[in-house]
Image 1 (cartoon, rainbow, N blue to C red):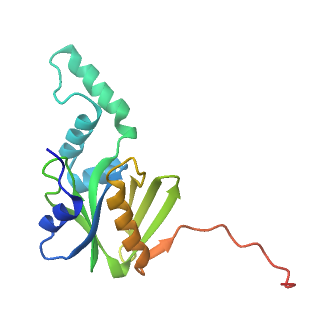
Image 2: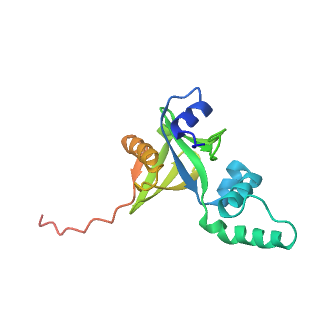
Image 3: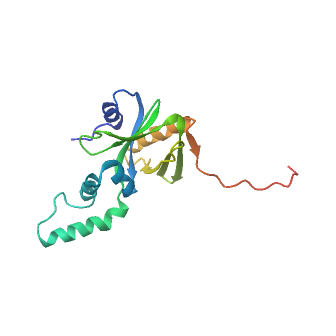
Length: 179
């Protein structure tokens, strides 16, 4: 079974919104993930992404838990980022059935989106200017990753919106007035 299309999955979760683009991003901050998803779902996701599907019985269970704990800093919790006319929606994401609920949203008119680029990696930081709430997400736009096309669509849509703030540029060189 192939995973559902992110845009179709987002539209199913957000039926009252017109979803313009959607892509899978990673939430590296597990504390923020626990706040959005709940600690149990984060633990289940980490276990799924770092080891065998089932915990072994007995002494092997301690080793299994230690492996999950050791790998956790390197694992991003997948979330669906969907852009509609009015908001940037963050939804949960699993291989199947995809998205099942909206976790939080950022109003497009009152939020900033800052994108940092390093080779094929992208770091998207969304900030609600009214509350100051911020969420950092990561993704790849590598052609080797099938989800890269969807991530590019989300980033392109945010780039055309007034909410996008460019990553801080290096300060301009001082001029001496001689043009």
